[in-house]
Length: 203
Image 1 (tube, helix red, strand yellow):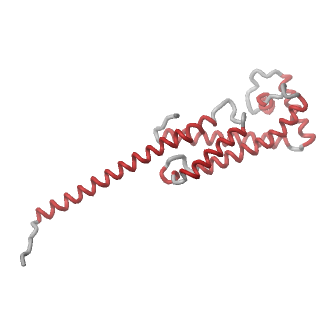
Image 2 (cartoon, helix red, strand yellow; image 1 turned 90 degrees about the horizontal axis):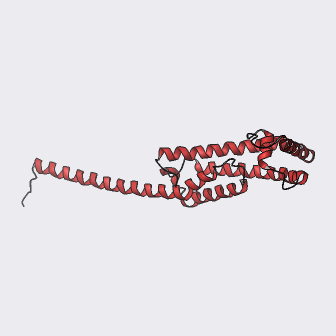
């Protein structure tokens, strides 16, 4: 029986070769994973983050609140269904699904109270004279802008009239307005920070 002896040099060469192969394989796998993650990141940026960012933009996000709430709900459901794993690999901001649920909830609560104010405003002023911007200006939520004193006073009266049928509606409406606006600012800030941290651009 013959015994094959492996020299220390051959042994070291074999170990080095095996190590290099393993390192090369790990590098290859990590590169593939990185490319895959980047493609997913780009996809969800285009599919959800940029459209959502655009929905939070505007003179006042409370205009078309129902539309924005529906849009946010669709984005949240899309992420929950197809990209829930994204919270582990940073495909979207941390706690983003919960943030979207909260934003939608606050918008829908705003919309419910707003519809009662709108009903009173259109009944008292008429559909052509009731103006959401003038109402916000009368409440001090936005600058007065081009609204004259008569418009401002008329919309202050809308809230007074609404109080006769729904006591406390002025405070309730002010609260839901501020909460929805705060949520939008936080949501937009989360997306902007995520863009910067991941060197993304609006698509």
